Image 1 (cartoon, rainbow, N blue to C red):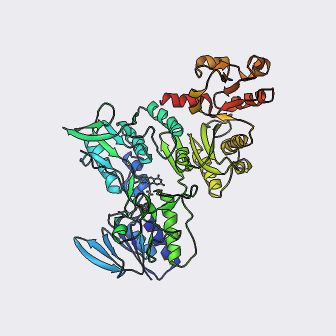
Image 2: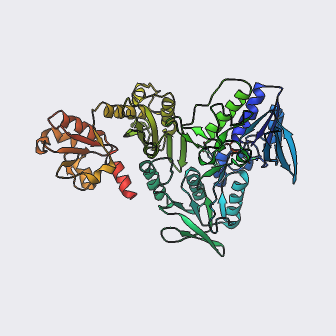
Image 3: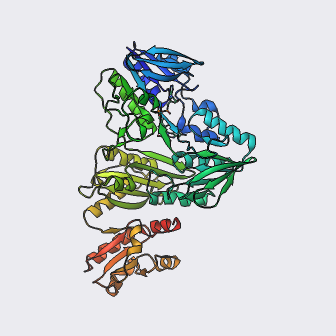
Length: 548
Ligand code: FAD
C-alpha cells in the first residue's frame, strides 16, 4: 500500500506515525511545503516572548529523525500543487519544477491559514501573522533588532491574547483591537469580562467594538485607522483575526466542501472520494453537543483525526464522533478554559438551556496557594444534560474543565457532576470540589430549590413589582451595591424579614451567590412565594458593569 500525506505537522505527522505502527510494510510519503515538520505551532507565542528560548525547542521531530524512527519518506520544502484523482496522483512542486507521485490512499492535513484581510496596509512588513516557525522567528528578530515599544494586536482570540502576554514579557506596550464586544469570541461576554478586567490591570489597552480599517506607515511607525474611535499609533502589529481552512487543493480536485470552506468528511475522516482522507484544521467536523457541522481548528481534534484516518486506511472500524471545542488560555497568571457550547452558541442554534454560576476555591481555604475560580455551567432544562462550561481562575482551572469535558463527552448531566468522587487533600482541592459545587448549584436550579435571575435581568427589575435585597453585611453594602437595593444581612434576616412585603417578588443577592441562596431558602420557607437569587452575585454584576 502506498499512502501520500499532505502536511507534516499535527494531523499529518500523527497519521504518518500511526500508519507505520499499523503497517510496517506500507510505503508512506509525507509532503511538507515548509522546512519543518511536527513542530509546536502552539508554542510559537512563547518563543516570541522568550519562554521557549531556543528555536530547537519548537521542533518536536526533525525530518531526519522522523524518517529514521518510522521509515517514512519525508519530503520537506515540497508543495503538492494539485490532486489528479482520475489517475490517482498528486503533482508536487520541488525547486521550481513539478513531478507526479502516485497513491493508493491520500491523506490531506494542510491546516488553516491566518486570515489577512484585503485592507490597506495589512500586507505591510511590520504586520505579522503567527502560523509557522518562520513567523515566530520574524517577530522575535524584529523585536531584537528594533526594540519596539508598542504593538497592536488585531483580534482578541486565543492566539492574540497569548501574544499579548508574550509581548508584555518583552516590555512592549500592547493594545488589542477586537471587533466584537468582548475578547475570546469562543466564550461568552460574562466569562471574557473577567479576563478583560484582569488584562487592563496588567496595563493592556483593549479597544472593543471596533476594527482596524486601514494601516498607514509613517516613517518607522504604523498608524491604525479604526472603524470606530480614535487612531492608534504603534511600532508593529500582530494579526490574529482567525484562520481559514486550506481547502483549495481539495476544492480544485472536486472534493465536496462544507461550512466555512472546510473539506467535508464522514465519520471515518473520508472525503467524497473514497481513496482520499482529510483531517485537522481544514476539515468540517460535527459539533459533539449540537450535532451541527462546524469548523473547530484545535490541536487535539487534529491529532485524533490523524490517528483515525490511519486506522481506517488499515481496515479498522474506528470513527470520529465529533469535536466539543475544549480549549484553554493562559493570560499572565489568569487561566480561562472552556468546553462544549457557549451560551452565545446555544442561542444561535436555538437549543434551550439553563445556566448557573459558581465561585469556589481551587483548594481548601486554610491551605496556602489556593485561589477562587468562577465556573459557568450550561445545561438542558429537561434532565440537566451538560451543554457547556467555562471557567476562569488562576489554579486548577484546567483540571476542572477537563473533568467537566469528560462528563459532557459521555453525555452526562449536572447530577453526574454531583456524583463524582474526585481526589481530595487540602493542597489540591476541597472536599466539595468546584466541579461538585457547580453540579450542586445547577441541580438546585433544576429541582426548583432556587430560582435564579441574572446580571442581565437587573436593569429590567420593576421596583413596583419586586424588591431588590442585598443580603451581604452592612459594611459590604456601604462599600457598593446594586442601585435600588435594600440591605437585609443574611445573619439577621430571620428577625428582619417581616419588614419585606409578601405580595411582591423578592430578588436577593450577595457577593457570589451563596448567601443569596441561603436567604432565598429562608424566605421561600417563611411565606414568601416569589424569591429569586442573583446567580454569580454582585461580583459578576460588577464585573459586567466595569466592562460596559
Ligand atoms: P497544521 O499543523 O497547520 O499543519 C499543516 C501543514 O501542512 C503546514 O505545515 C503546511 O505548511 C502544510 N501544507 C499545507 N498545504 C500543503 C501542500 N499543498 N503541500 C505540502 N504541505 C502543505 N491548538 C490548540 O488546541 N491549543 C493551542 O494552544 C494552540 N495554539 C496555537 C498557537 C498558534 C500560534 C497556532 C498557529 C495554532 C495553535 N493551535 C492550538 C492550533 C493547532 O496548532 C492546530 O489546530 C493544528 O496544528 C492543526 O493541525 P493540522 O495538521 O490540521 O495543520
